Length: 461
Figure 1 (cartoon, rainbow, N blue to C red):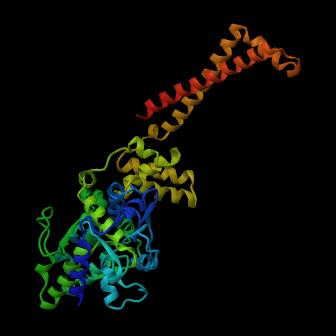
Figure 2 (figure 1 turned 180 degrees about the horizontal axis):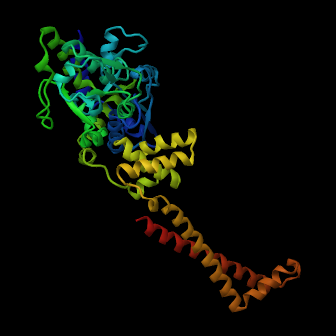
Figure 3 (figure 1 turned 135 degrees about the vertical axis):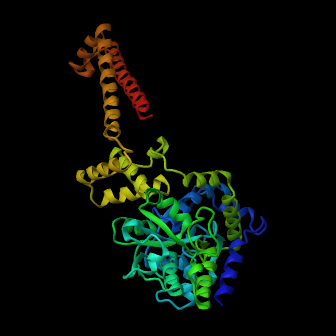
């Protein structure tokens, strides 16, 4: 039954049908509207990175080019999100992204599930995952032999039943007899990574595609190592990492790996709409989703995202953050989160700022970032201050030049005379001369400010 469900869901997801099925009315429906793309896990993780990348390119494939806003709805390992999507208004303006493993949880009767996964309108999935287990250097586990010999269960992080990080670890525990203790309750792989870095956890088991992007620093530094691959074949990038199948001793264990990890890897990251969404809009969005995944710009961005992260944010990205302090904290977020759009990182730090910001926190941010990558210098931090001073200086210089000009030209006397007498007793010529003096001063002040802003922009570059 499980296999039939997976095949059915995959078939539906892959039907990104031809143009037929939707009408000109649907082409006009999305014009001027906003689509909410809601992710079931926290910002900075793999699901979030996928959705924000796809969201940046999906709009241009949808007739009417609607705005797409990515949101995060965490909790209960994705069940809260799935329950919400099941009851959401079926108008085609809300797209969900959740773990495909929740379908199996529904079949097995997990508590808290209020949805029927077969009724969702699936748009597709960006690709199948290659699951691996990564452990920290501090755990002392550097090989499968050491893992089997561990005297105490190794702590792995999870989001809850149905999430890949939780299910993969538990399946490996049952199939191989590995000493594993899964700690559920994390809101996403970004939170799991932070817990592993702090020593709260030893590692995690989920997609290599997420690990190599969001955990890149730890992998490059040797603080984390991939110990085993939970897939039928080795990934080309991991030729020296053993397969879990090599350590299975029973047929039951092999079946657990196949049905619990291998088969579900193809539905790990489904995108879907609420039940009852008009079929014409479903077909339209399926086609747009398929076209977006083939977009050369998206493919280039995805490839770039797997390389080293840029040392600085581009100028257009800096505008995502409000204010100099938030921008500098965003640089720190970019260094720490490792993936996802700049808007994601800024939303993280802006939420932090909203919950209570202190100079001590900023100082810790700067010290930690400079100690790790030296990406942010103190000159960089105070650059926005210098830019503001340049603008103020330009304004003052402009006002001074304007005042000097009207003094030399004699307009100053006219201005003093107009200001020192009632308006009804001033002649028309005196009022005109006073107005001209005002215009000269304000105009020079404006030009000075523009000059200061131009120099500030050069300093930014």
